Length: 133
Image (cartoon, rainbow, N blue to C red; front, side):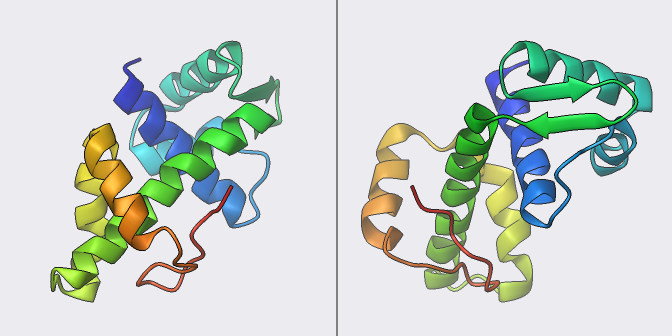
């Protein structure tokens, strides 16, 4: 699993956690990623091995402190990027989708500039809270 794939999956799991779904089963991940349930289960087991959470048989996956921290970091970058896209004049209905296409590919330098400009914001253009540390 590449770093970008891992970040994409962690972002998906953290969004579920953020909406109150603290135990994420393979069925949920399979549906979100449009992959077979068996593949989703393997992914969750691998993330557990990497320390992002704990996989409990017949229950699901729970993000660990490390997983929550990484999820916050990834989602913060995504939502700050949404702020930039809004300032560039992108239609609000397209902001989240466009940010999702590029957020995981941002280099450290651009990420730092976006953080400097928008880091004090508390909410993204969609009104969702921007995680802080």
